[in-house]
Length: 438
Image 1 (cartoon, rainbow, N blue to C red):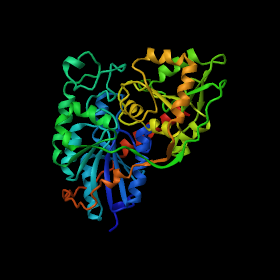
Image 2 (cartoon, rainbow, N blue to C red):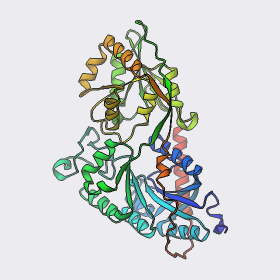
Image 3 (cartoon, helix red, strand yellow):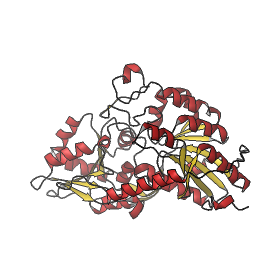
Image 4 (cartoon, rainbow, N blue to C red):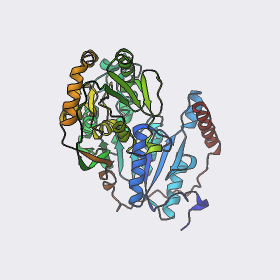
């Protein structure tokens, strides 16, 4: 049966997953952007489409923001079909149902910028399994990264007035609202953590959802190759890299300080940044890398070609999952991190692929002893007899779908109204951002 007005002609399959994300998945970068691209490809292989809804927040005024929260952008298999009110989206799903399409599950990837009342209404109206994916800690704290006043890790303990009252992100009602939302779908909820570290931090706050929580990593190693590492020559410099977006909460500021003090022509450590944007082009050498333009193996290949010895992954608070960690491990480098880095510290310690320093002071002292660093590089890089051949998206993620479900959607008869004025504002904003970035 043809879809009304060809509204969803972009939907390629009769079954689809509904995703809620805080950003347009086509424009999302970093780890979340990579996850969406991987997930879309795996769903396509299984004959399942993706319908993703995202909000359109603005900082212009609270009044305008409240108005825009009524509308969600809707992307079907990478094609924007428009902005619609939440009730209009119910009408879309009913329209899809009459055309033989049916939802498999709802996946909540991010809740930032969503009006939670609308999310609750939407979940109540669509009786399918719900999965909450822990890409960050927004469900624990509006700060998402668990940094007190954006600077230091506040610890894994549940938010409370005693712990959080001096932090700018302290919002007493936040936890109650999130808990109420999850409680409303408890019987059909699964919480998917990409690492044991993310699971353990999240359960400190949501201990009563332990039975609903599972761990499924984003990537899986596939195949093995012999480790062909050759020991460094005595006069060869240490090549140290920062991998990914230059963000303070991921250790960029520390890396710049190290480069300024320990880099230069008269030193024996060279500093590199692997990523698209490099805000420091002096001592730090930039190697442009984009998984969007260069493919999913681009980062590992670039690290290998440049013969990097050491990667600094100094996240200031627990990473739920670090793509750059696994890319660095595949490239066979020594990883330096701190005990608060979550998934990174856990893997570095358990697989013995680097060192975990308790403080920045310890790291500084260590890097000033270049002979010791060189010995450690040789030790860590030759200690693994086999390396992963490739890293692939984990098929356990789509394998967890119940494709036999046949939900009864509410018999909504309204005709969805395309909010052209909101879409126009959104398009204008994207054009402005593109002009600023060019």
